[in-house]
Image (cartoon, rainbow, N blue to C red; front, side, top):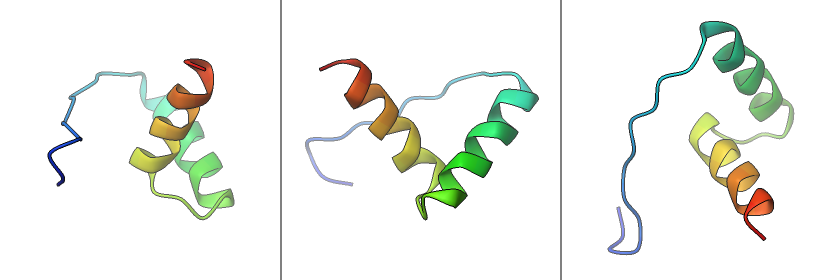
Length: 44
């Protein structure tokens, strides 16, 4: 892990996690990378 990143533990409904995992898989991304990408787009 680079010095420019940090870890965050989040709690979410199982159904949401499953949906996000499916979306990440469809985009050939890890769940973590997919969530970061969504957050970055939202924060622009």
